[in-house]
Length: 303
Image 1 (cartoon, rainbow, N blue to C red):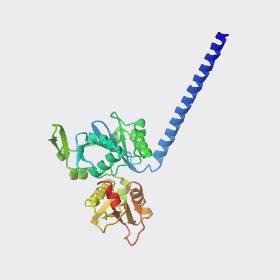
Image 2: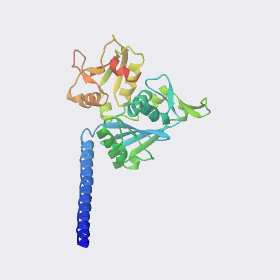
Image 3: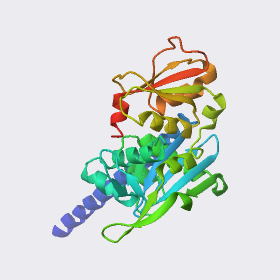
Image 4: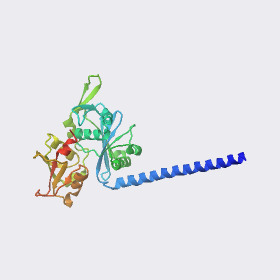
């Protein structure tokens, strides 16, 4: 009798194990299908856009830009010893320490993104932290910036492009100098203005560049230097900035007025979705010109 019970018990255990195994296989398959659907959606929706993502490693920070339609990618490799001005503070940190500092502030991705945007003068879509030298699908899932689809797009396009379609760049030596910190460590001091000028053509969206829509930047934030930062971000993306001036103080983030016709559609879409500005009508602005206003809300991000 006991042997029979043990035999029946063993059958039940094996059946349960089989069911658990099938359930695990189903969930794994479902996850792969969801990933495939998501990654395919990410590569189709706005696939003509040029995406920029910061990849944080232990000793380096890589800023990667990819363009699926252009079939090109570029990465700027920033040494961990490079000093980067930190938004929200009056100081600088080594690039390798930005993520840890951000974790202490409970906003690692945001702090890395804003600090690099302000330093390089380029709009960054996403940030990920990786352990090794490569960037893969699992890395794309590990982020807290709320833009998983953008991370997946960058990883997918980066993996699809051939090596001869990728360009790797490092900060030129003539823009850097080595200094010793008070604790004796080597620090790389970078000429910030020179760096912005040098990187200006790395991230260009060629469709925006080809439309040649003139952009007048108006700084109404009351914060000095914000208009020039916006100028660098626009130029880095291919925008044709023809002037930068100050206006009367206004609240708000970023908005623009001017022609929103089909001939400038790529530039208009780019200003909305990547730069994050809202269109507020034409209101007497001449054809072929956009007036872009930078308000106090936008400036606060980089204080």
